[in-house]
Length: 279
Image 1 (cartoon, rainbow, N blue to C red):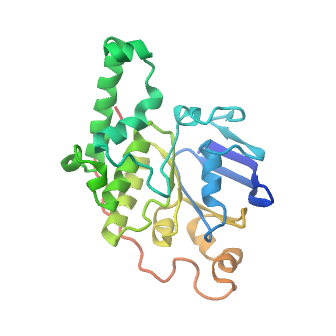
Image 2 (image 1 turned 90 degrees about the vertical axis):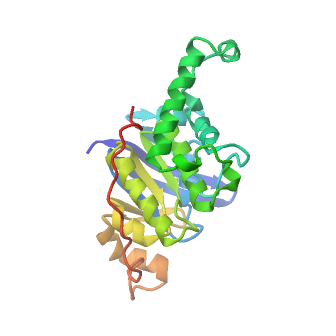
């Protein structure tokens, strides 16, 4: 598989704190890649660098063969890098449809005058955007709450809205920051199924930060391990589980069960077929 994203000696310093230090990372087209590590290891800061939320102190990012140096933060999404956030960042008083439409805004080209009169290009773009959002709502099985106010939904449903908004920006690379945090087992299994379908049916490459080792070990193609801002391991899930450096980072010892070994594996429900999202 060809390389979609590469980070080269990527670093971020906040005053005297080195949050990310010389991280090299490659993400290949069509894979599900996980970034794991203890709390405070620098994982979300790494995501903030990859998505343009923060500029790196040193190092560089290359996306589809193009250096992202000097690219404006809001252009990252337009280039095809979408993300969800660890803490929900939704418009709680807006509906499901309205929240998802905000994710498609990066692709709207109509000027202010066209938007005001709602004719020509502005009208065509809105029709296309709403068609895409309806496909995403169907894909995420949210038809029954499409017009519901987000603040009235359950936590698990709000997480789906956040996922749908990220899909609305038509990403080539999707960054998922702790999507199943706070979810019950059934909700977790649903998200794992959606992640697989996003990759397999929509052709989107995925990088996820996740503390649920059952999901990481069950659906990841490769795993990167971060500790104290540095990458300490990389490989297939089975390789990472047996890596002494990973055991040391998680358990403080080179003995015992590897991360995620004790819980029963997540059972991912069969994929669904969606005919509308990709169009």
